[in-house]
Image (cartoon, rainbow, N blue to C red; front, side, top):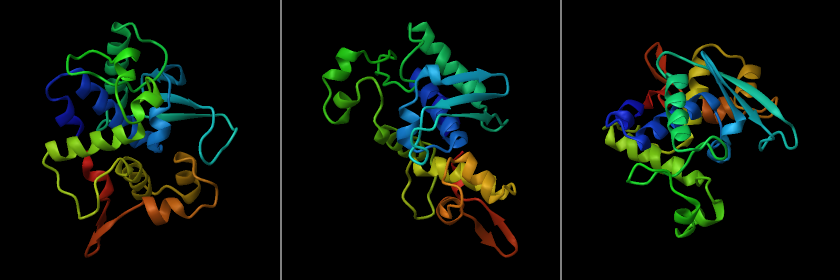
Length: 209
């Protein structure tokens, strides 16, 4: 999906490929992804530091997490390319993930204010549904086929969790990575998915990339 998104070398594809790589490593809920500000991210050569004021599980608890890069995700490259492009538009603060118009420009507050649905209420912040819509769009454009389950942004979190599970992560490591409540059975039961053929098992949630 990421390669398909950026194949035309257009800003919206840069945004979407960065958003997918980030979501896959961040293991966040879509609302957490789109609520992030540029000031919450620190990009280094081999990863990204993310600061969170709180999340659904940790109300009122600040957190800083590190997303280590991987060769197949190229998170640092993709995120830097997008953030640098925003800076060229004069955007260095505020929402990370922005609406990009067909003209290749970032939507202004005035443009956003004319739109219906959740756009007006969210201001410059994307709606969580937008992440879902972009996953569906590029999944189809890349010619990928699902296993019968609905295609959604949930696959970003499930795919990342499955990768960790297949790499031998402990329950505690999974809980910490996805910021689930300690002792929760949710990561293993809902997010880590394997498909087995004979003695061989692989992660089907992680194949979208």
